[in-house]
Amino acid sequence: MLETPEQSAAGRFDTVLIANRGEIAVRIQHACRELGLKTVAICSEADREAPYGSTADRFLCIGPSSAAKSYLNQDAILLAARLAGAGAIHPGYGFLSENAAFADAAEKAGLTFIGPTSSSIATMGDKISAKRAMMAAGVPCVPGPDTALPDDPDTIERIALEIGYPVIIKAAGGGGGRGMRVVPKADVLHEAIALTREEARKAFGSPSLYMEKFLEHPRHIEIQVICDDHGNAVWLGHRDCSMQRRHQKVVEEAPAAGIVPDIIQPVGMACVQACLQIGYRGVGTFEFLYEDGAFYFIEMNTRLQVEHPVTEMTSGVDIVQAQIKAAQGHVLDLNQGDVTCEGHSFECRINAEDPNSFLPSAGVVTHLALPTGPGIRVDTHIHAGYKVSPYYDSLIAKLIVHAPTRAEAMARMREALAGTEVEGISTNIPFLRALFEDGAFAQGETDIHYLEQWLKLRRAA
Image (cartoon, rainbow, N blue to C red):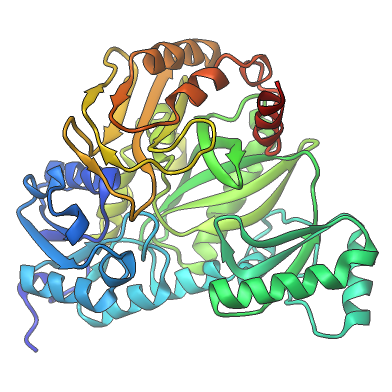
C-alpha cells in the first residue's frame, strides 16, 4: 500500500482521526481546529446524531452500538483513518487510549499515535514494571517488592510479614479500581490471593499480582507531565483527586490543598526524570498516595486525563494542544522555569445517573441550562434534545471553575452548580450540590475514603 503524504513521516500530518466520543471528542476537535488541523470524527450506530459529527471535516460510522464492535474495534478504526486520509489518531481517554497493541498497530500502519510510544505504554501499563522503572528513577513508591507474587504460599506469607499488615493485593495489569483487595490480617491472605488472581485473569487476561502496604488514610495526588521527543519534559503542578466513589473520581481540584512547594518540588522533578529515562513522549499523569507528608507512587496514566482542565486553568497551558504538538515532533515551547500555577480550580463530573442510587439514567435531555461567567468552563457534547445512550460511560459534562483562592473557587462552584439544569434524565447534580456544602470538604480535611463514609452517613440519616 502506498503511503499518503500525511503518513510519509512521523509527526507530519494535517488530519487527525479522533478515536473517541462524547465530551472528549469535542475537546480534541477544538484543539485541532486551533492548530489548523482537519478532524475525522467516528461514531457507533448509537452516536450517529452526535453533534460533533457535523463540526468535523469527516464523520464515519464504524460499527454497531456495542463498544466492543465500534470504539474498541481496532481494525475498523485503522480502516476509517485510511479511508479518510488521516495521518494521526488521537485516542482521547478510556477505550484504546492505553492499549499498547493499538498504538503499535497505528505506528505500523504509518500513522502517528498522539500519545506515547507503544513501548512506553507497555512499560507503564504493567504495574510491576512501572514500579520498577519509578524506583530506578528515584520516584517514591508504596512499600512492597517490585516483582510479581510467587505461587508459593510460604513465600507470600513472608512478603506480607515484611511489608506489615494491612496489605493490598493488586492485579499487575489492573486499573479503574478493579483487581484489588485489602488484606487486614494473615488468616485471610490466601483466600484474598485466590480471589484476586481469578478476578485479574478474567478482567485483564493475566493472573499476575503484586502486594503493597495498604495506606489507611491517604489522599490521591496527581502530577501532570508533558514531554517532547527532544529530551525536554516539565511538570505542571499537582491535583487532588481524593473525592472518589468506588475508586472512581467525582471531584478534582488543583492544586492539592496544604501541600507546600518544598515537599512537592522534588517529587515533580523525579517524575520528570523518570520520563526522560524511559523516553516518554506526550502527556502523562503520575498518581500518588499521600499520607503523613510522604508521597507513594501507585501508577502512571499514559494518556490525557478526564481531569486535565483543572491543570489547564491553573497553569494556563493547553494540555491537549501540547499533546498534539509533541506528536508532531515540535520542541516543547516551555521549560520548568516558565511554569507558574495560579489560583485554584475545581472540576465536577456531571453524570447521567440517579443522585441517590447512582444507577445510570438513559433518555432524552428535554431541557439544558449551563452556567456562564468569569472563571466558569463547561466541557460537554450534549444539548436539549440529545439522547443519552445506555451503552457507554455516564459522563455527560464536566463543570470547571477557577478563582484566586480555594474558598473563592468553592463558592464559584456552588453558584455554577445552582445554575446548571438538566431535565429529562436523572443526574448527579443534587449530590454534587450537597457535597460542596460539606464542612470537612470545604476545609480540605478529606482522604480517599471520605466520600464513601459521607455517603453512608447520608443514607443512614
